[in-house]
Amino acid sequence: MKSWQLSILAILFICLVFIYFAGQRQQREEGPDIFVSILPNFENKWPDSLKAYWRGSKDKGLVIKKTKDGWLVSVKKEGKKFWTYAKSQKVEKLLHDLSSLTGQLRADDRRYLDDFGLGENQGLQIVLERSGSRLASLVVGKKGPGWGSCFVKKADSSKVYLVSKDILADFDIWSKQMDSPIEIRPWIELTLIKETPFEINEVEYKCGKIHWSLKRGQQKQGSKWQLNIGKKSQVIDGNRAQEILSRLFPMRATKPLPKDEFRIQDKAKEEGVLTVKDKNGALHLLYLRPCNEKEQICLVKDEKGYVFNIAKDIKKDLDEPKKLIKEEDKKGKTSQQKR
Image 1 (cartoon, rainbow, N blue to C red):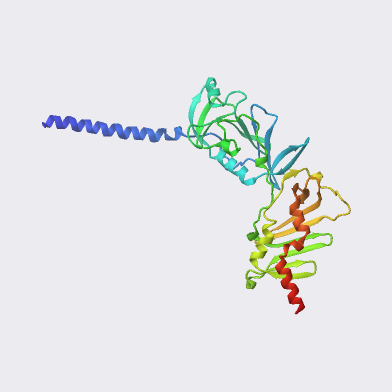
Image 2 (cartoon, rainbow, N blue to C red; image 1 turned 180 degrees about the vertical axis):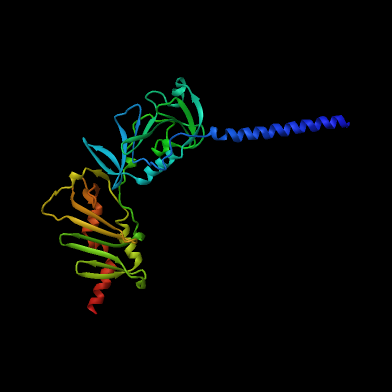
């Protein structure tokens, strides 16, 4: 190959290298514009309330606020409107997903909003507030072409973004787009005592003449537990204690109720009090009313005054402590007394 041909090839090679690096530099410069933040930074102003509703029916929506009792959700049952516990992890996950929301611009024309499920009366609208002031308002449309993505826009904008978060999934919406009001129940916290039997150190229950307790032994006693029923006391092993506790915990309710529902239904019966102490020393208190035999449910109130229904079987186990002792345990104790 002649020298002038080599020179041309060298010049072409240099030009290609220059074009390549120029393109890489341009991509790096344009990179921040490809993915843009959709909502303002919540770092210093974390929302303390949110509202969400299907834009096809604004009457039925989700309303959540943060109080001294934690996250609460507004519930409406049988014409009554009241607040009850919300699932804090579910709320925090949604807020985290929204705070880190970035996306790619896909359209900027109101004529195309229907195509993305963001037209009038379409989509899920989320309003975030702090101390009564609005921080942001977002509309979520159809799910995106890839897994875990969806199309969104600000409420007052026509710019449509594709984000790599499935916000609809945070609301338990698994269809391609929202086409009915939000279900409130998945947001309600129905676990009254979340601790498992392995996380509990002591349980005590009192109701009239009924009084029993189960307490984990000291470290030197290993896995032994002290079971007291009335004036009678018995040492049981850890496996038997776990069997007893697993009948009760974690303790879940069937539905929330307004606070004023907790009233004396049968004055001839006493109010039950359940005290649970976990391994960290935290105390949990529950107050129980007599059961509704027809509906097979009982009323329960926690130390903060929130009221729920629980299954009758839970209170039945609490009120009949003799059932906590196995038949072989009873026989063993009787034979020891005869000696």
